[in-house]
Length: 382
Length: 227
Image 1 (cartoon, rainbow over the protein chains, first blue to last red):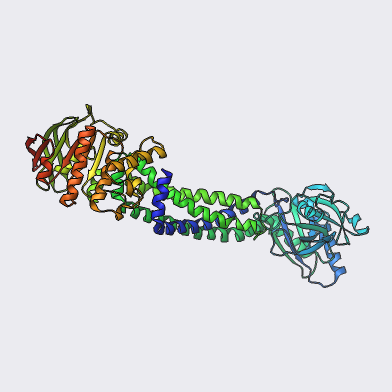
Image 2: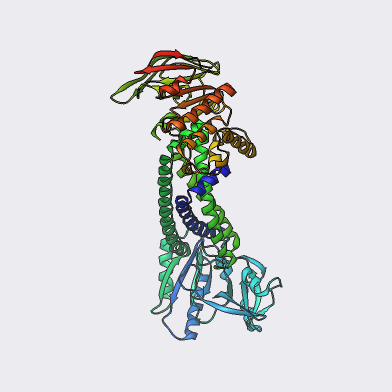
């Protein structure tokens, strides 16, 4: 039967080519959408490596250019926070707080290799505020800063890129930094951020933004009181508090909304392709009523007629999909984007299944209509 | 072989009810060559379609090969058509996108027959109708007579016991018509295939064993010929 279907498809190659082209384009659209979906989902389910629960970002502006005054002000704030029962822990950080809009990155070198990584300057309490777990080694302390080389903590991914399978602890990178610890993940930009490189080093004198972990049950009144109290510590200070949960949600929306819009547009395109396919199949079957009549007369059952037309559509779809797969596999082969090959693999699998699903869905009703045509009527019309 | 009892066929639309066949009772024996004549619109083709299980009667009973078929499922009816009946139509009903050989093997596609066996049987059927050298041609490359011979090959490829021919010579000139008639006569004689043929041509009808005449959906006469 397959041979029979191939012959008929080949004979009508002009009209089938258009249908195949439509399926090919739909496949590429679906491949892009599914690959993006798989990529985004994988990122989403990857551990973040940090917890935003009850963590607030406190943006402090001391309105001074003096580094010594800045240090005194930070000490003042530290003393106040240590005495506040509502605060479980706190840490100072460079302005690139998690889920903020500020980023900082640097090239780090080891053994002739140069790797780009996010660079965060933070105080020693940073892991306890964000619940960061060590994979190996330890976090740096104030005592580390007096030794030779700046102590740094890096993510597992950065360690792998710089050192391969070598033990990272104790290694020196970019001559002046010494690795004292490794953390597993640190996805601090959004829930959909890929696992990227990050390096933590001790804070500098000018790093005065703050992360605080508050006690359970703290409310908006406590937040207002905290802002007022810190503000009162100095003259002309500006204090702005934001919840890390909200900041994360804002970042997530910034990424998710364009993706959803893209999905909507692609969904609309694929829906139109489906409608087109449906129309073509419907017209095709209307034109082939005589053929349906003769097939029924020589012994085809209703089910066989239905299966025949669905199979024909699936064979045409297979040509479109095969062409699509050929182009789709070029993306991982040419390493167009820095994305794992398995993402494209699932993109191809899901796009293929979607195309077959759409093809069956579009072919089902016209094929059913073909199956219920009365043979005598079909032959008479012809 | 074919026994129609009190067959009635009514076509209904929202406003009109047309009686196409009225109380037809007809018995056709195995190996008989029967022709049906009558003016246009008298119900000849409808009767043939009912005999061929392509249409259902509104009333009455059909027995084919001793089996009462009114309770048959679609699957069983299709199998019956596939194995017992061959059809020949005035307008041939060939699939223009398929070569002659593929057109002929069409009934075998719906049987459990291997591809090689299908090819062999189809080639054999084409040989019987004298078209062995046209297997790879497309219907559009054939004359009317050749197309009808392909249709006959398709009708006989499954070795059916009954052939139903709806004006098989209607679109052909007399020479071609004669050729087709000879093939049918030969099939009837050699294989004892039961043939029912609708025709407008009195001369063709006289070459069959029996002629029944229809008028306004009713059977009006039956003449037996000695051929």
